[in-house]
Length: 229
Image (cartoon, rainbow, N blue to C red; front, side, top):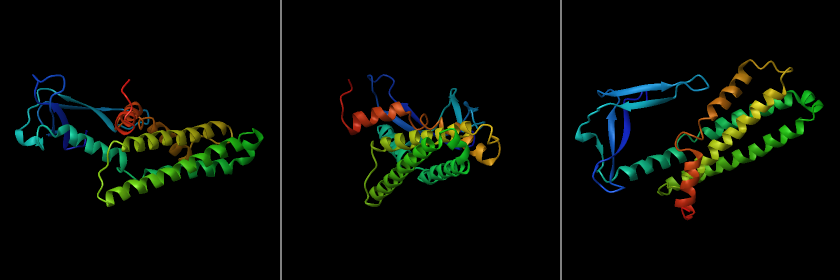
C-alpha cells in the first residue's frame, strides 16, 4: 500500500438496507485526502503489509467499478485469480528451495548418519518433492481451463490452501535441518540466510489472500456444498 497508486475499496452503498445490502467496488487514489498508510514490520524485516485508514475520505462518482450491485462478484473474480493463477512461478521457486535443502542434507550426510537423522530427512524431502509435482500439474490444469475459456471459481481456494501450507512444510524441513546441523554448519551465509528468510516469509502465506480457515470454509460450502452446521 505504501507504493500503490490506487486501492480497491468494498463498501455497502445503502446504510438503511437489511442485513445484506448491495456491495460496490471503488477505485480509490492512495493520495486522496484522509488516507493514512502505516507499514507493518514483519518478522523477516520487510514491510510488505500495511494498515490503511480512511479518515473522512471523499471520492468522486467515477471511482465506481461497474455498478453498485457488481462489487461483490467482481471481488470474488479478483480473488479467484489471486488464489489460483497469480504467481504461478511459486512452484519453481519452492522447488529451488527444496533442492537447496536436499543438497545441504547430502553434503552433511556423515554427520546426519551418526545422529540417525539422514533417513528421516530424505523421506521428508522426497515426500515434499512429490507434493510439488502435484502442485505443478495443478497449475497446468488451471491454465488449461483458462485457455478453454472457462472461468475460475471457488475451487481455487483449494489451490491456495495447498501451496501456502505446502510451502510452510518445505521451509520447516529447512529450519529443522539447520538446527540439526548446529555445530557442523555455521548457521550463517547465503544458504542458511535464504532458508531462514523463506521460513519467516512463509508464515504470512496462510494469512494473506484469505486465511486457511477461510479457504476451508469456501471449499466446504461452495465446492462441496456441505451444510453450514
